[in-house]
Every structure is written in C-alpha cells, then in structure tokens.
Amino acid sequence: QKEVEQNSGPLSVPEGAIASLNCTYSDRGSQSFFWYRQYSGKSPELIMFIYSNGDKEDGRFTAQLNKASQYVSLLIRDSQPSDSATYLCAVRGSGNTGKLIFGQGTTLQVKP
Amino acid sequence: DGGITQSPKYLFRKEGQNVTLSCEQNLNHDAMYWYRQDPGQGLRLIYYSQIVNDFQKGDIAEGYSVSREKKESFPLTVTSAQKNPTAFYLCASSPFASGGDEQFFGPGTRLTVL
Image 1: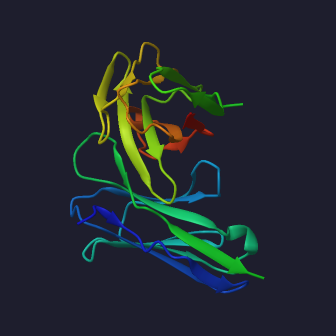
Image 2: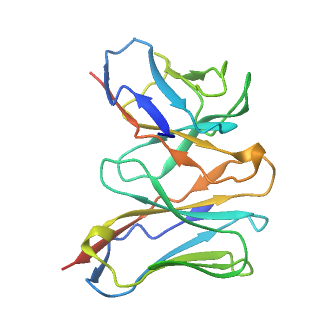
Image 3: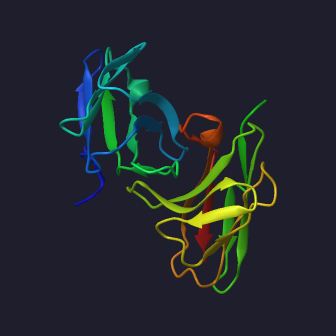
C-alpha cells in the first residue's frame, strides 16, 4: 500500500466549476499536510497547507482535513484554464525528520 | 530576491561520468532536500540535511552523494553507479528547526544520459 495515494486522473472540469482533488494517507500519526501545484516542465509550487481537522480557505482554494478518515482534499472554486496542472499532495508523517511523503499527483484539466 | 537556485537547468552526461548538481538558498533555511521526479510520477527523496555537516539517506540514495559544508549550499553528485539517472532533479529547503516544515522548491535540473 502506498503511503500517500492520489487518483492520477486526468480530472476534467469546465471553466467556472468546482474541482475536487482527493488524497489519502496511511500514517495515522501524520502531522502536516500540503498541496503543491506543478505546471508541466516546472517545479512544484506550494499553494496550501493544513495542520488541523476542518477546512482552511485561501482565496479560491479550500483545503479539508479529516484525520479520523486519513483524508485530505483540495477544492478549487471558479476553476480557470490557468489552474490546469498536476496537483501533488504531501504529508509529513510522525517522527521529527521533516520529511514529506508525496503522492503521485492528480492532473487537472479545466476546459474553457 | 530570496529563493532557491539550481544549476545547470539542463545537463547531459555520458555513461560512466560523475556529475554534480548545484543547489543554493538564501532563505536562511535549516533543512535542504533532494528529490528525483520521473515522468508521470511523484517525487522520491534522495538525500536530506537538517543541519550543516549532517545529512541522511532518503528512499533512493544508491548511486548519489551529497555534502552540506555550508548552510546555504547542498550539492548533489550523481555517480556512475546510478544506473538510470535520466530524470528531473529538484532541490527544496524548509525552515524546519526554526519552525515550519513547508518545503519550497528550486526550478530543477533536467539530467539526460546520452
């Protein structure tokens, strides 16, 4: 079983819709959760992080964390073609190494 | 400007050669990391360092070596022992010991073996 799992997609949504990206993790003691956006040929860019159960909103982005279900998601409201990218979920597990475990990423396509 | 720089952007290597990838940060971050990304895949950790003069192996350290002689620098050497080195190499840093474990990435180096 992979430690951090994401559906590779592609996830296709029309412009203006809500895109929902999901991630599950296996280490119940995981501490911190991150979402990165990666455009083709570029390096990952941090867009959201969340530490506590519940929702965290930043502009059009909302991260949701449910530690009991070991599930973290990213919602993108009013999706734009410029949101088309691969979204990587990363989890910092239990322990004090600072290491992040990355999922393989979900490719999002926003169609005009 | 504060940030992470990697050089070169593109690197071509002949089989049997060692090559060194540069990573520099001026963010005053404590921790630095090297990842490898293959097409259509996530990031795999090669080596990481939480403090100067100390580093640990990640999940795929075989065929790679690193040093951390200065806080701002964390070069990666890809040795001839690495059998399939063609990949996108990403360096990252994080505050870590100073509080905060979010990682920030450099622009990457694309290595191709000829």
